[in-house]
Amino acid sequence: MEASPAKVIQYFNGEKQNLIPLFQRPYTWADSNWQTLWDDLMVQYEVGDTGTHFMGAIVSVPARSIPVGVSKYLIIDGQQRLTTVSLLLCALRDCLDSNTASRIQEVYLTNRFRDVEDTLKFVPTQADRNIYRTIALDREVPKKDKDVRMAAAYHFFTKKLTKSTDINDNPVDATKVLITLEQCLQVVMINLGEDDDPYLIFESLNFKGEPLTQADLVRNFLL
Image 1 (cartoon, rainbow, N blue to C red):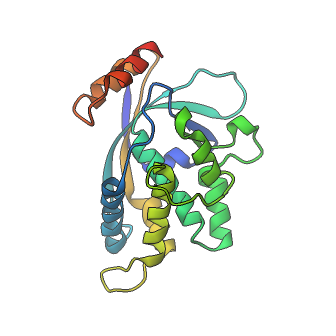
Image 2 (tube, one colour; image 1 turned 30 degrees about the horizontal axis):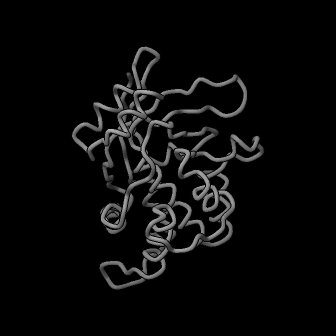
């Protein structure tokens, strides 16, 4: 096991694919979680790119795959944060000028000139893949639906980017929000080795977090 500080944007930079394994629960964050992330982001927005905000740890393990295509990693812990950051990137893409939107799409959201299965840089667990693909790859705006968490998150951040003001009551600058996200959001990157058991680590890390249901534990054990 190796641990090192890293900017969260590194998970979306370069030719790679982060996959949420089947034993993970679907996306569960809601308004209070999104608001907390936005508030933390805006603190750094006001401070400038000299400070950093620590988001916690992201635990990953290399996925076994054929020796072609992009490098793939299973996200063992931190999927809620990575999913939310990815949806925020989608909202930023759709609120900024075409050049910046293309940069976000081609640098952070997709792997260009790759096979279909390798296109997305972030792949949620099975239950969330269709809606995420619609937002991130097809660039179709989903209907606002509080019961579809990813669609609700996308609309939450789009509203914040277009309707919010800073401490001086000036409209929030989406370009500066992107720079803040790129420069100031930091995590501890924990990479597991071949001898580490990702399923046991998943249970241990989540023991004191949001309680795992019996269904979560059974799915984890079986898969």
